[in-house]
Length: 255
Image (tube, rainbow, N blue to C red; front, side, top):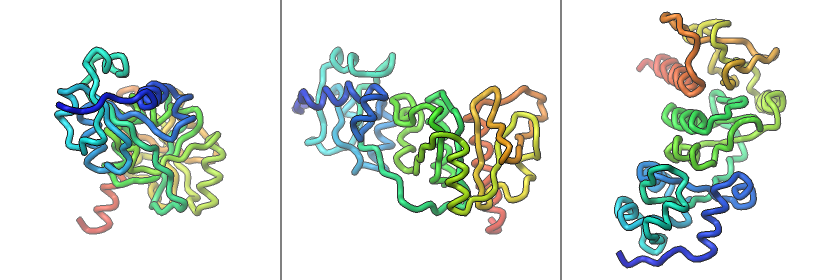
């Protein structure tokens, strides 16, 4: 494979993007792993600045050769953020959110600190056709290596909007005409399968465990668990709620 090695600036950028501080200084992020990079290239190739990888890793993707950079396996492992590297990292531009909000409801994350959960929720949002994913400053960085890898690049198709606090998030939502607020509670509130208006110009909030997002301005909902289990994690709960919105939408359309 006759490809150039990454230049000094490209290597410097790759190292910087492995940190949150580096991502704040540069409008890019890293997407690592064969499957995640393939997803990114399939749906958002225009976002990709370049791909760096080993000969085996780069052989597994379809992308113009002029944007590929080759590294020996040992050098690549030093750049990788995983224990078992798959040999490819894409550097992609972090998208700018659209100015307007056009969505039946907003999905919000309050203090979701685990990047794997955040990425999984982003992927579920995209699968359910929900484009507005808002989050509070106490949440993990959605553009970290692990979050992007867990999301399989789903973040690039969403409007990810950060707010200093949950109150500020809800204030902005109300300004835009989203006046109903619901938070997911492990035990209390109405069943998410029966609550009226749950996805009608509303904000549906998932909070970090174990306390959840208990805010006076929002009504509580819960996911019924006949197995009498304590709780499910944030990503599982989010997926249940997101696909309940799909069920209701299809039922309303007679499908």
